[in-house]
Length: 459
Ligand code: F0G
Image (cartoon, rainbow, N blue to C red; front, top):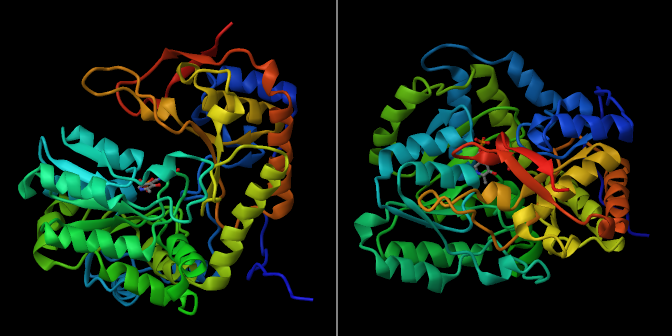
């Protein structure tokens, strides 16, 4: 018999979970104004709010923490991280930042001005926030298949080359300071971008003289999908695939809280030294000196180690297979999810889950609330609340996809807990027709409303 894949690590220390009753949770979620971000972590049993900064570091990462060098300038931990980035990604220069959005902030501070255009594949919300804050425009060029949760296209993170070329033709080069490919594409469901698409986008961008960057938060998971799904890559190692992927772009922003398996950190990496110099000034103003940029020396040391571990096949296989297990178990109960199953999360299609609840009543948020009440599982809405209002007209934006994301932290939960989540989803699905109405907003902030919004049930 063929041996199954094996999780290539074991548990040395455990963190206890506080359990609760359905009655407790009904009270708590009401007190939290039906907003998942207002819940205390000890009111949650399985926390799938995000895979960001919630991973478990390895013994070797903790050992690196002890070796961290806290010198203000020229820390050896910085030098170690720089060497890892050079070896792994092939970028000679980089600037540390405290997290991914800080990397976006310093890069866009140097590059963007009012009226600029930033094409990409469903930019993440902080990326879009940083673009729109500067009165520039994020143009989504994702392939149409990404918006059909039943399509099984293997690379739903891909950019549509016609859409992209139309943008390149429509605006003068000076108006498009950068194009961003998000790998994997979080907003379309943790979906990968193929090496072929990366090559094509790179060629097109070179033809029009446009700078091309990755949002590399989940670059290792993207490389795993390339190995599994793209024929020419099945015999290559993840590190070889990663190295090739980064040859096609001019740089990247990184939230190290995802694929680098650390609790805090980020960076911007560059091929081009003049661009590095321009962005470095903003790192110094906003983050700190260029050899620490908002990170402790020990955190840079753990990050270097994390980048190496996260690009090993065994780890990535067990990671992605766990998401697949959660997704396939849920599908076996009839739960409609984005397919193929993504790299860091499953995305439940709320339009198909609650077809009788209109987007104006936030069906994906309702689903998150019901799942929490059922079993103490915390997911997050990636739908109308997150899409926010049009900054000019102040009208609600209704996205094509109305999803509830269950993001799985790295190396934290086991498949028994994934089964618990899938069964909880089933119970909520079985009583879906009892839900007659969704939710309404009673208070919201001017920007990024989903974090602080107050909601109530519609009677
Ligand atoms: N880019 C992507 C693709 C992301 O998913 C995130 C964060 C960021 C940038 C920003 O990085 O949080 O370190 O400032 N995503 C988290 C999530 C918050 O839950 O998906 P950050």
